[in-house]
Image (tube, rainbow, N blue to C red; front, side, top):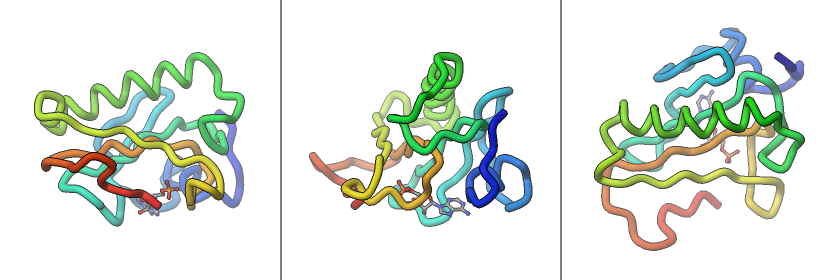
Length: 118
Ligand code: AMP
């Protein structure tokens, strides 16, 4: 597992900063977003540090993250009603935490293009 000293989500993965964990396996941690934009707002992160999805993500970590998204959605009870998966990359997308994470958003009807994570 690669880590970065000044990375918030690396610290959450290491247990140095608390989080509300909803899923964990060897490669992935998923926890509730501290500032939820929807009734269900979960962040799915690889335990290894990658800056974003355009980083050189290993096949194993990419697969694990994507599989975890489905598991998290099923566990949260939103896989039938529907949900949205968003990952922000870089300044134009207003990425604020520079550790790859997928937002899993659901639990209420969304309008097209809503929510904006800008
Ligand atoms: P982004 O803007 O795509 O980088 O998203 C970063 C997300 O991390 C935001 O939705 C924040 O609310 C969330 N966040 C920041 N700090 C924490 C934390 N300590 N625990 C859980 N979520 C966090």
